[in-house]
Length: 298
Image (cartoon, rainbow, N blue to C red; front, side, top):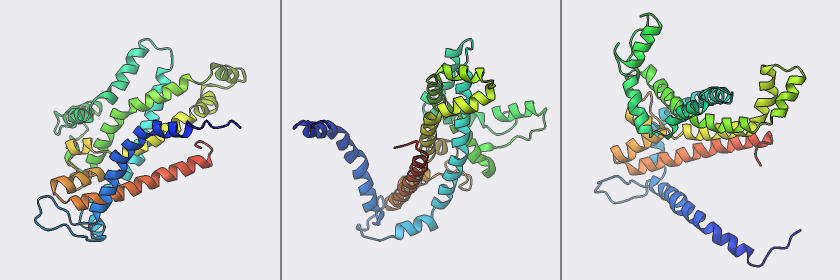
């Protein structure tokens, strides 16, 4: 066992100080302030004195706001976007890992949406989802179905609003998964594929028994990150639907912003943020427990 140097502990704390300071100032203190405010009656421009109101904000958040529907929408959004976006990223990575002409150009094109601001992406998709037969998506679907498609107002119909936001998010984020999984594919030794081919394995069996096991850690990373990102969707909702129609596309962060800033009920918004933190923490702990049982995280 190596002996620790006398000044090693002090140096370690000195190196960690910037990161710990940032964690304290930008994460722990705002969250602690949100917890405190969630038990108050704070409203913007309210003449009433600040008072302790107990858990009433938490009760009202579920009974008089769209928080419950927003949580359900967030869960549905994650259940659809995470597997579809991961599968699409994997398919693109497999395709662009092959020796294709112009492969670098295609990799750049597929990754470009990731670097675009979400506000810009949302504005572009608002134009694509334009209602009426002249809307880009309506016109494309009408052409593909030989005129059988009935034009829809995707962003103003309850059935289509959330799927429209999902499609926008999948298109914008699939390039990130592609890059991560492409790096994982290139780290798999070619000798494994050659050995599998010698044993008579076709491409499908090579994919099942060489590619997927080799991509285990990148896939775990992609699923965890995509899940967490899918719960913080806001920009697309704010710009494309503003949570409507009839709360069909509302999400928790959008509901928090609408309550705290549009309606001025800061305390209620703080209570929603605490509830949202607990939900995300629970999901992260469940994921970590499941992956630890499979030996994929320490």
